[in-house]
Image 1 (tube, one colour):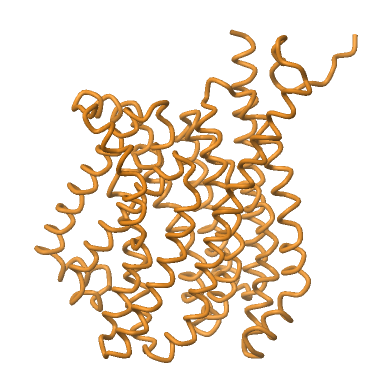
Image 2: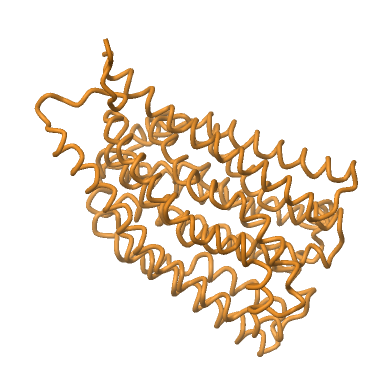
Length: 449
């Protein structure tokens, strides 16, 4: 007997196929509407940042920009430790009482970790930064603490905004952060505060939206504050223990692996090639930040509201979102693949044609990354943080293997990046398949209960 094709879980008898499909499409439409709001804010913010770069590079020296790069990398590595990644769980509690308890827990962890970091840097800033070969930051170690606290609070508020689906305020903060940050960098640089102006401007860029987001949520927060208790926070600390166990090291590996191509390029090919690669990676980061990350936030907000008890609905939303993401990612993928060198030469000048060649090669993985990156939020909803960690371990090992292979066989930059792009494409493809299979298995389990 032939079996009818169907989704992993049978449709409930009291819901028609038409109603089920329409409901799924409505959820998908909501995701892409929210994505458009976030993308508009992120796009304007990125545009402001790009327009300010030619001015900033004429005020500050390369040495100043190097201090900024080290400062930004340190903050990126330390900020996730501030809340132990419990902030990522804020969209998950089913009611605001529990969510506020989790927010207070995140704030307490951030304050405690910041005091601990300040004490370590106060006592050991000189030997620690020298050991890490970051002596240029010694006069500004105190600003690291301010940046960590500010970025940590903004991360908490961002996750609360995701929970509330308050994407318009979130988009506005991104625009203001980038605008005011650029103004601070330029104005303080003209006033002679170098490189301090760059660092203060970077702090504003990462944490400038705290006040506006706080004003938007304080009523709901204060209304539920009387329900905050030590027992509830301990319960949530244990309930979401997978986040510090698995999500925290995963985030570290993500930051580390994102910096690996530039670090290995400097080691293998020298400063000029690394500069060309840096511009190529920056150009590729724009569509990912504009659409991939914003889609991930909107998608996470939607499936977190649905909850893990309704895997059929999450499966339908995921299937529709994946199809639309694939359709959206094809144009930039093909444009970069075919016209990368010409576009870079026209936009940035003839000396940057090599960056266009690199971008054309790296576009191979852009399609797979764009489609698969938002889907990993499913792992948070279903409590599979250990899988996310495993995915990032495999990715980091794969990247290290590619560049060590290039070193051993003395590959050219083009061949090395070609292998790197192919390896990442395979990684993102299997990541998407793994995540979708998790949802399918959850559907089957529910059907059998």
